Length: 406
Image (cartoon, rainbow, N blue to C red; front, side, top):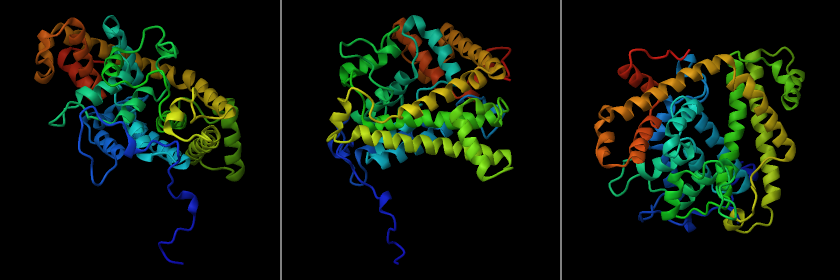
């Protein structure tokens, strides 16, 4: 056998008829010459990786704060895990792996410091001026706030990447043009509406199958790594997980194959099995839903997600999240830190709005000429871009006492 001869054809790349084709993408807001060495979606992925916002994810909290240990997930490690799963799904389904990867890598760019706590606090602060939404903020980052290129603000990503970034969790409007459930109470964020007026993203349609891969990969990664982090932190035990039938079954498998296995290895084996079961289920279910589709346009017009769990695994996902909510996200030790982080964000917002001269020069430039809403939005942009560490440093600079977040 020759060394380079493939032995398993299952893993050769293929492009399905329903995949997004970079050669037929709808272009960029600012026209650019094509690259001789990279597809349009590869260029998008590379621009996201090299962005300032992407690097900041290293020091932004997922659930725990930085001081609690180097092995807990950050926004960056979570994003890398989502990217790996999204790419695996895209390859198995014959989709464009580069687009799926670009969307996975960019899905959390708009998150604030201190995880969802920071987002909730900033949303409350911005409520009179349109609120704060991390998906809308990600769009602002890649279309306005990144300042790297001579010819344009933002990253000038393709239409398909912008569409997937905004709609990876599903349509934002129904067929009648009304906000869907997620935005029913407050409406679609202004940043998305403004961009859609210039570059229509079909907010009532589903996104590409590649975007749906990124979205469901996010769910899978959350389930697996939050179980891992929660166990490491001692918030719950392996025995506690037996309350979830899906996890009890996996733990029984591990115990039967390796009796007496040390706990740290049991935890890793459990995480591997959670990811594998979910990924294999999504591939089977999605192949059924995609059967017969002949274009990416059919995916968008399907009226339902095409990359998804089977009903049984959807229930497993629901029960895992139902377990994690009280036992991790609302655990007393986590809630205590959340309250402190909430205060840090609110303090920073109030202080910087009251004294905008405290902002760095590049952020305060031209501020006086803006209306109140845009001035507040500028402050929110600045705070949202902070890492956990920098937010605490800024708080110490501006206030006599800063919470320890413990």
